[in-house]
Length: 243
Image (cartoon, rainbow, N blue to C red):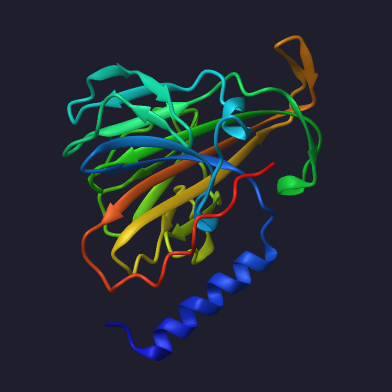
């Protein structure tokens, strides 16, 4: 078990980050013995949007299974009340990827420090283990194969200085900045599920679905589970979906 001093230090870091961060939704993938599912909401708040409701704004989520040898296979998603169920699950060396290029243009009102008409493109990756992977998503976070090390890519190129939120299922989180190689070193002290989250904004106006936008914001997550570590702090109760 961790010492009380170490745990208090982690808790303070998490609270400081939570107080300074803007709230924004993301998509992420979870997997258990029953299979894999895509959620839309806020991971560290244990918020899962539902249907009918905000979950319905994910219009065309597309799934992909990437094998350890790089072979790709499309994955069918089926919408349920609180998630999309994926028809495949990831085994050793594999990744599950989902993205939705058809989220409706909306007005950004200060989220991530942005204002104006935003085209939001969410991406998600789940890995069954932390062996090194190659990037595939436009904005991607992948394990490097080194313990606690991950790298952020934009269009296949590493992103020096990228900001990544590291969150545990208990709600603890902190922000880490990537080094000159786009690599972050994350503190992962507990057993259980983790999510890494990053954003990238293209300040290029355009049109999607017949509606103009001022910029494109990409949000990408990497989720995985650790079988070793200290016992996780309590997980917060499931939050009520947005109205």
